[in-house]
Amino acid sequence: MNVLLVHPEYPATFWSFKHVLPFVAKKAAYPPLGLLTVAGMLPREWVLRLVDLNVDKLKDQDIEWADMVMVSAMMVQKPSVLRVLERCRQKGVRTAAGGPLFTSAEDDFKDLVDHLILGEAEISLPPFLADLAENRAEPVYRAAQFPDLTQTPVPRWDLIPIRKYATLMIQSSRGCPFNCEFCDITNLFGRVPRLKTAERLIGELDVMYSMGWRGNIFFVDDNFIGNKGQIKKILPELIAWMKARNYPFTFLTEASINLSDDEELIELMVEAGFDTVFIGLETPNEQSLRECEKSQNLKFDMLAAIEHLQAAGIQVLGGYIVGFDNDDETIFSRQIKFIQESGVVTAMVGLLNALPNTKLWQRLKEENRLLLGSSGDNTDGTINFIPKMDKDTLIQGYRKVVRTIYSPRQFYRRVSRFLEKYQPRRRRRMTFAEFKAFLRSLLYLGVLGNGVTQWYYWKMLVKSAIFHRKAFSEAVTLMIYGYHFRKVAKKVSAQRS
Image (tube, rainbow, N blue to C red; front, side, top):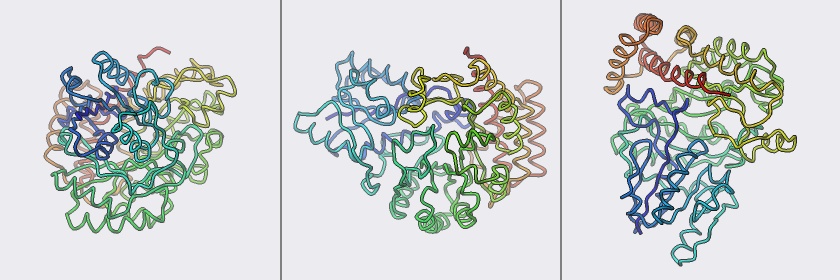
């Protein structure tokens, strides 16, 4: 059987880094890890092709070649998904689909997809494949439990040109012990983190290493430290592997703020090569933290926690939200102050949105405040429920936050504050690709940029070269990121309510 796996297109969002990619000569920020993993579960006798619409175009010949097209996607990819499914329907090609989008919005696709494979594929895909072999495949297959990750195959990296991506991905666990009201992770993957073994993780790293990959690898766990005891057993083996190969990779991941008070875990992660962690900081408003059941954040002085992690050599990326019921009109200035004082350069500020089947979704539905389905991009300046604050005031306030924190002056102030606190464990060697990105930044930011941007760029470049030489590569990267974030902020500000 000829099977075409299609990864739909992402729009230009905060995390797409679309405007950064030309600097590093890459086509996409991240590869389609979910589809590559599913590919590893398919029968070996099948002939597989994978088209990532973030890298290549989907041609009619690709669809016509296939006996079946398989699609996996997240909510933000829905517009692209609909276009792909329509083209398959016009060509009369059978379709199968799974992933977070389809699992969360099953009813939207029952008439558009021949076979829905919902939940984690380790459970729902095998019965579909068995029935397909007997020519009696059903319309819907649903995972009734969470799988042991020992069943998960090594991703089929051979199906994509890895050099077209800025960062590769790996997953060590699924699930999160916390249960924030707005988050859909516990619905999708449960509250008990399930981990791969150290041997298995290192085996996956061996594959990427043998393919010649050197650079960033994103541990895409819902919460990398969700099971601290188990991850502390895995990290020493990861450290030994990295040291033996002279640190070929740099790791980034997502974690909860309780990482900041675990010195042993911080030391292990830094020694293993982790230098960046995304944390959901959400808001300085304690009433809003209680509202969304973000209890873990209430136990910490978040500014002190961020400073501690950055001083330990871990750059903190932050997620922030406005639009909680307990937010009033002061929240916008408070968020700006919170973000600026934290030195979190990469600050993703979003409007609260209710994702399907979350506790927030259920509560708003009961209160008759739920409106349209979410776009899946909480940074696009839209909201899908009736807020307590006046809607126009909320949206305009949100736009003000984004405009302000990504204005050249405020952005470079955060870069400067970060560099003053950041103490990298080892000096990061600038790769050839990074050096080329640096040269492009000299042209596009230092020469062709507008006057204000040029001034701050050269000021930060000189300051970094003199006072922060150990973090010079990070400083250049952040200045390039600033270019992307300003583009995204401009788009958000231009949108209509």
